[in-house]
Image (cartoon, rainbow, N blue to C red; front, top):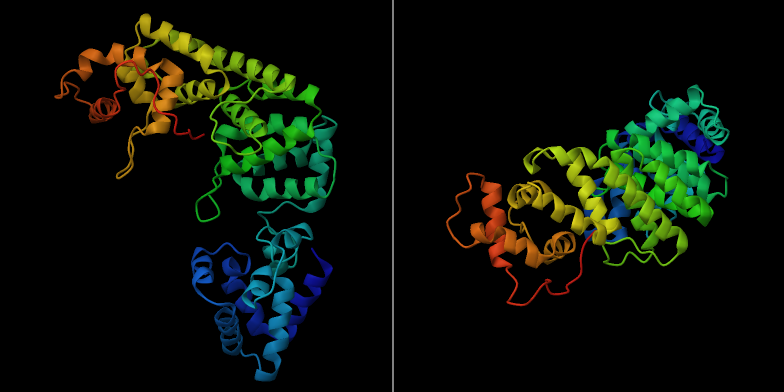
Length: 398
């Protein structure tokens, strides 16, 4: 806990118990995790937001001549209140000092200790030390379990130590994250925009770039030893090689390490897909299709002949597309220009349209599967002009 925050909260609990209870009621707004508060913040002026806090303090029983002082104390504790008063604030600083204004540490100040669903700092650091020395213990096991179930908070706390210059067991963490990647259970945060997989991907990118270049390819290959790990390895490599967040879907290989990593991860993906050889496209699992899409990101030039060989040896193109393309909720389009560009990279549009020609030539689909019928209709609408082998260059999405 932060000592100053602890003393202020203790003072409020003792002298202004109504304010102390108010903190619990408005936890999400005070820690910046309330969707309603964020919407209000975009439509109200600082003066209006400050008056709302004054009204709440009056309702909490604060004497009129104490309201200004109590509000200033709340501003010291919570960057969101500081913003509502019209001042600048630093939300990262609150997390870095483990203050009550951070959603990751708020509950400690309410129970005056470490809640059952939290991991004490000493145990957290001991877990990292165990991972560093490859000496697993109870603390490391607990940390890795919470990495699955409390992903956002654990990744933030690791990032805080990284930002503070603390040396982390990057390679061990990356391998552990790969092992957990397919088992994440934490709910999305930031108004549902950031899921647990994304939180893990951002941390993985940072940890990978902390490693010396010569260690990155072997670590990514080790991460890709499992199918779920191969997905995280691919996404980590993509984020690490696209630092400008450009529109490229493919892994960039300007440096030796990234070329080696691309080839190593691609080889692992191909190995994971070997069992698909003996089953029809209709029986591909979600893991199988994820791996095919990841291969498209790492090395589409080697994926295209692999897919064509499967199609030549029995896979039907329409069921394969039905597995690769998820039904789109209205009013979104099932196939847009970026999806078409992806299909071109994977199959070659000329080859794909040739294989589907008998089904595309009739406007009345014989397919009993509505999803398949929608794919065919979307492809008819996007049929390239004669001689055009690729969709217009409009950018792609990751």
